[in-house]
Amino acid sequence: ETGVTQTPRHLVMGMTNKKSLKCEQHLGHNAMYWYKQSAKKPLELMFVYNFKEQTENNSVPSRFSPECPNSSHLFLHLHTLQPEDSALYLCASSQGAVGTDTQYFGPGTRLTVL
Amino acid sequence: GQNIDQPTEMTATEGAIVQINCTYQTSGFNGLFWYQQHAGEAPTFLSYNVLDGLEEKGRFSSFLSRSKGYSYLLLKELQMKDSASYLCAVRDSNYQLIWGAGTKLIIKP
Image 1 (tube, helix red, strand yellow):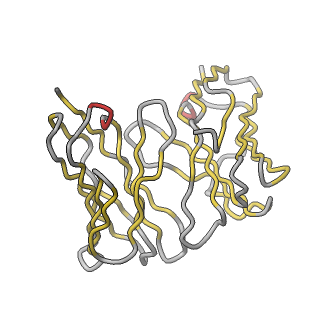
Image 2 (cartoon, helix red, strand yellow):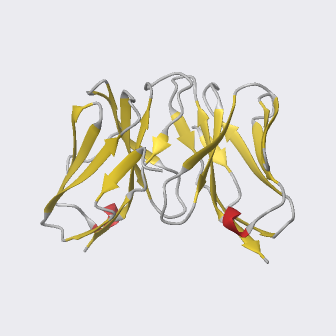
């Protein structure tokens, strides 16, 4: 399944580093999402973009900064992260951001903050 | 608050049947999703229920009772490849997806 791709698949960074996660969808969808998945916890929605406009920011710390240059690409810029930010970061897309649209996920980036 | 409950872990035998339950308390209801997630991989869509009743897709079926705030995913003729986590998610009145923590299903030979 290559509908939604994410790079890198694994990332180890120190607390003072700056890095970016990339997501690309090849499904012609208009909405894209960032989720955080921690062990044994529900998926946490971080950001939603619909037609390149951010429509949701669920009280995410400013050390996470999203960017959506077009409806096919989504970035998550990371800086001065904390060890508790270590998790699987999942990108998803859907035809629209509301309604009955199903979300399709990428494989995720496994982030470890040292 | 909004809440989705599902068992943390279940074990079943290859060739058998297993039922994974999901109960929810949400502000409104606009559909329930089941996803499968193998370790280290993307969650993949399995089923969507918005009306009461049973939806069947091959070896997998999903049931919904809106009055009881309850759903289950039924897996028949279990195969080793069915070992995965199964995520239940409910779309609330604001069309926000509320996720459960997932049920890890272990299949034994």
